Image (cartoon, rainbow, N blue to C red; front, side, top):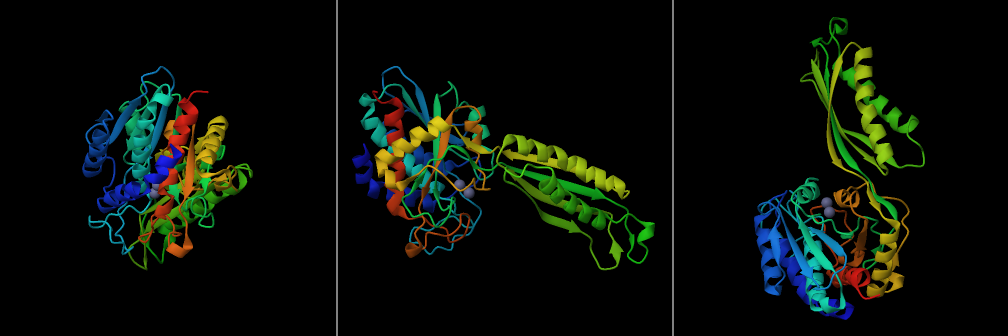
Length: 394
Ligand SMILES: [Zn+2]
Ligand SMILES: [Zn+2]
């Protein structure tokens, strides 16, 4: 199986480049779904759409009873105008595959072909999930609502290509680590209502800007003084908007930001306290605060046994010297793969494609982000190897 994935390298590159040309955004990806569906039909793998163009679910039935393994790839792109200058650059204005999801889709399609060919060596079912809407953090929950986990699989695996775990990790390295590997991601919006007046007579109004400044500081106090030091967390106010001119105190101010945490406990603690702190401070200074929370995704927490199984599978595919099983710490970047891991034991892996000589060491979401295509076969081989290890004859 591994050798066959290696032989498919050129084919995987073509799949990736085809997809790279047609990036689509959000939860509904008509062109991308049509492309993936066509490839699965060519292989004779039964599949169906999730909602309308909201992703593809496919199944490879080995004909023998056994467990169900779910392998997931995300397929959506970003509203970023591409500046890579690649000959197969985006043909859709203002959109780009700047996170490598084109590669994820290509690698899973290749793995599907190899797994199908060798299905007589496996028992059970391999379910393939081509997910939309990862970048908008809605896709995984939508796929779950539409039955991606019905009947419930026994294990789930996914993988991210690129430089997420560090551009210094050489291309071709697979990372399969236990525990939390990626943080949660949530958004908050605080509207402060004061009373506007002339800038020369602040005593006649309630200044929402000074109140907002206290809230910004108060929120940092929450991170610094109330959360346990062992758990990484971030709270950042990324927008503070107020006022129109230099001599008028405005009526309102708005703060907007993001919270990241590496455990559900700390995530809930921070989210619970934002409202109390904002409203308490506003009250102290005679203003009012309205707080809106938009919950994003939970931390990505790998099941230790599944991470170990994935690491062994990866070592069989690419050699143990190309597999890392420990990370310095979780990245504060988030992934909606967390939604599956909250329900099914599994692991989320990383495949480095960072190669400074090829300029593929840039950060994700950059308009010049690119991957080292030489590692594409590895992603397919790791997926196939996981299927073999999980569903193969013991
Ligand atoms: Zn991304
Ligand atoms: Zn991504």
